[in-house]
Image (cartoon, rainbow, N blue to C red; front, side, top):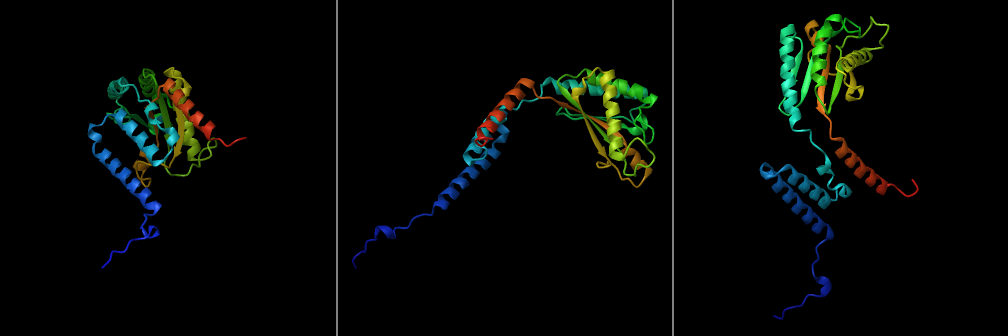
Length: 255
């Protein structure tokens, strides 16, 4: 039997989307292989690999390399924070306040100081009590030794409606007033610039215990101080310039 020849227009062709799909699967396979090798890849190599993948996938291609600009906290900062945290814990023990004041530290350099409102304030008020001064002075001395950090001061209340105060509208207003009072006292006593403080009003939105008992309500009424590192200003300036340049390039004509 004679073999029939195919006409050129009878040759099977592959749809264009199949090629794109195959490329995407190859890139995903490469990405998951990369995940398996994280244990032996340095942070620098990881940042470079992620930037390359961003470009390959077409995700924010103009931002390639920005990840490598994001600075890390100084290596000595976690060691200094840990040392000062232990020092503060000892001072609280001497004052007999170690059961009230919590100093929580982790190995990544994070620090949280939790101060219950019964140590700091009277009910429905944001004026610091005299007995709060020694505690806050010890905290101010400790925080004043840290450089290149920000202090996030959060005020918390229980869930009971605020009805006995003419000064504050609600619990959120009260929690802000208390956090602000602590931040300004630390600013004055520790000679810490106010620019290093971030004051946050949480009100009753972040309870640590149930509000259906007096004990739980007492735990929820607190002021928390978080210590976090500030990125190097020169690096952040460089990062901001890169982002501004991209925004300027992407801006529509005449905008």
